[in-house]
Image (cartoon, rainbow, N blue to C red):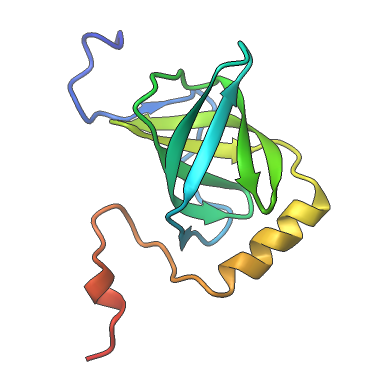
Length: 128
């Protein structure tokens, strides 16, 4: 199905993508810069992170399968590939992140709430 014919909100997925998460995801909302191979860059906002990837919202049109550089991730730039697109939210898988970055993501995630999905509310994590 072409991009134009795809109903709004229907996920576009890389052919090799399996929707099985390898690692626990955590809520993280922070600014992110996405740099493309053509040397252009633009701002995005993360919504969740794991040690293998993250999701971010961006108004820039990008293609599933495209390789980019995300910065900062764990305090450094990280190579990633776009694995999924739903509306203006992109799912990125890190490509061989340095051990130091993986360590920093582990440390960061210790202080974050688990991510259960885009429909979650901050109120669900407040004890009653």
